[in-house]
Image 1 (cartoon, rainbow, N blue to C red):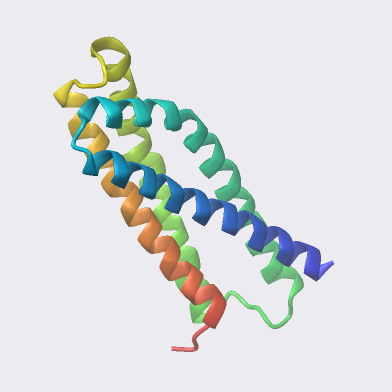
Image 2: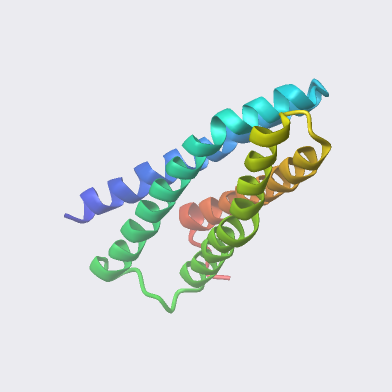
Length: 152
């Protein structure tokens, strides 16, 4: 049973992290072209999928991670790498929910009302992209902690 739970945790973490890195690559490429319309269209086209992908995979990664702690006697909530990982994932999810998601919805409303090249939408898109980069960096730190399990 532990192997299946570990597989679920790792599989959903890979999808979450891979999706995050892929979105970072797409937005970096669109920003490099300095075409606000292309960036706005990319943002519009990927937003709904991103919300579903990240909410499902992050929830499942977290759920399987807690399940692992409960069924593996070698993992305990008192371990610093687990505590730090939980705090970092919590900060990442909180940032997504309360910072990136509202700005994303606002940017999408502007894009649908005024078009993808609207400067107000561009400002919000940049804020969402910055939050996404921060999320990706935090997830990389969590990945490091999960692999190496440092004792500090």
